[in-house]
Image: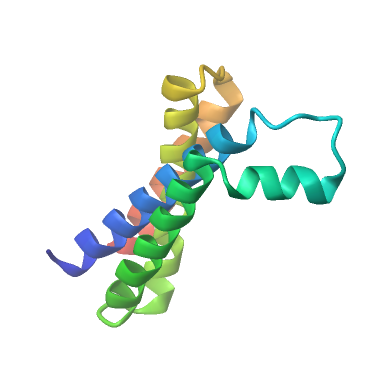
Length: 116
């Protein structure tokens, strides 16, 4: 896998982790204290899976950073916005506004300028 592939795979795993964390925290009872809610969230399978994906993403990110300039690699992380919004729409049935779409287009254009 190339250096950009490592970075993109890491970013994809991190984005998937966000969706899993949201799924795992969405069904926690609201009437509990903050500490009780946090504990219940931490034992949710989706939360545990999301944390595992973050761990794998971090390891891949370390490999990507060893091969890319930080000034190139870090702006690539903004692609996670695109992935999370898309996954939120497809998996969580969240709506996407036209202003969100426009903002995402600007992010992608900006990343293309930085990578070239």
